[in-house]
Image (tube, rainbow, N blue to C red; front, side, top):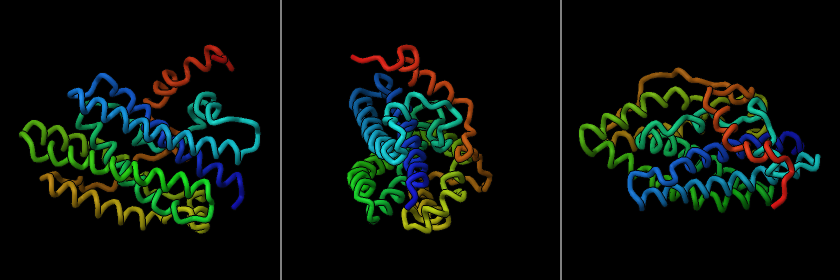
Length: 251
């Protein structure tokens, strides 16, 4: 496998986990109650650990002397390729649950495939991540059920979140030349296979919670070309401030 192609793969997945972890970190002290506040923060730490491992490996593959911190804190917005769904804001608790549940089901399939490859580093990252993501799915699916089958208000809120975030789902299955190369090399499943798996799992879960998947194929895309929603710039301004204000500071 060409190192630059593998570098691109690792940064894409690493960026996705990094931005997801930042959104989860924003819930610290903002959870609906103390136990859930702590749980959400810990789920974010899982994602941060995955991001660090992936970006560290990406930096090694690049071979330009950069570190995982350099990739996280010193790249501009257009160099990030995280999926657009991950940068959507914590509008309310229902939006948090839907966004993270959708992404957790996606990551479960991604890591399941990576755990089978010959690359010891990536397979090792995936094997550890699978255990974490399985718990994430249990946790978020529990909340999908509680909110969907709860009060009229909770059902309405989570259905609204599903309806508004659905436009970003199609990008999960999009394929460009980079993706096709990784599929051919056995590092990831095809977009069609991933979509079939994701739709089956998610739609079944929504039905159990008396929720409805939108009947729309519209997909907001752009992350693979470095094109993002207005939210990523604000995330990076927050996340990268200290490193940019005090370059190469040691403490």
